[in-house]
Structure formats: structure tokens, C-alpha cells
Image (tube, rainbow, N blue to C red; front, side, top):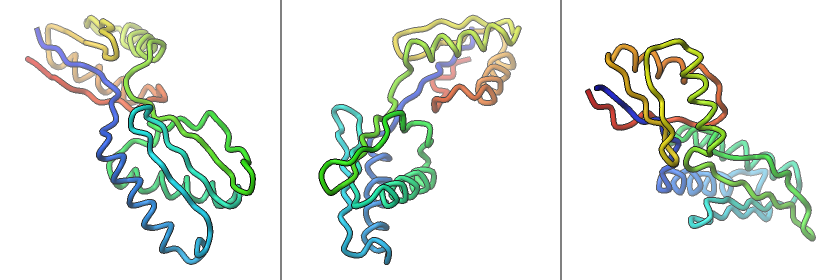
Amino acid sequence: MPSFDIASKVDIQVLDNAINVTNKEVTNRFDFKGAHVLIELNKKEFSLTIEADSDMKLKQVIDVLISRSIKQGLDPQAYDFSKEGHQSGKVFKQVISIRNGLAQEDAKKIVKLIKDSGLKVQAAIMDDIVRVTAKKIDDLQEVIAATKTGNLGVPLQFINMKS
């Protein structure tokens, strides 16, 4: 039976490249000359710490990060901006967690979306992926189209397509 997996993984090297390009652009921009800007990636915890002199500059750095991530092929939904930036002494600091892997509630949303589509497919949650099987590949392609237009709030990759 044909099957594929729905996953939400972030390639750490692509993320690191996006951060390096962002750092390079920020250091070369005129409006950031002499300003304190720090972007650190914690690869173990999948989090990003951004420091800047002011709240406005912090938001500009985040905008540059998002635009450079898109150019690197990284979905901006991978960043979790739920925590607001705060002032720590003279600098503004924001910790951004990076979504890696499907959370249980996101996997349940995907399965519900697939079940509600009315297609003859089976969806099963396996750790941090959702495996979808069907009798025809056409049904699987319809599931891919439905999940892409579902606006689930997480970046999705469709991997391990087997026929």
C-alpha cells in the first residue's frame, strides 16, 4: 500500500546559515553601525537568543531573520514568537524557540484534518510524524494538497513516499 510521512523538521545547518547571513547583513547596515546586536543559536535546545539596543532594532533584526530564512528555504512558521521580548539592563532580549518535530496536539490536528477531508486514507501518529496510507497514490496527493491549504501553523514536510 502506498504511504508517506508528514513531519516537521528543521535542518540545523540551514538555520545556522540563515543566522549567519542575518548577522552579516545587520553588521553591514548603516542604521546598525555601532549598535549592540547579538544573535545566538543554541543547537541543543533549538532556541535563538536575540539582543539589541532598542525594541525597534530588535524587531528589525527579527524581520531580517525571517526574510533571510525564507531565502534559505526555511519556513518562518518554524520560529515560535510566543514569548515577548523584554528589557535586560541596557539591552532588549528575546528568546525564540524553534519548532522541531510535530507536537502531539499538532499531530492530532493533522489527523483530524485528514479524517474530515473524507478521503479513503488511514492516518496514524507515530512519535513526531504522521504516517498516511491509502490504496491509491492519487488519494495521498489529495491529502498533501489538503494539509498544505489547512493553515495548521507548523511547517510541514512530506517524506518517505512509498508506492
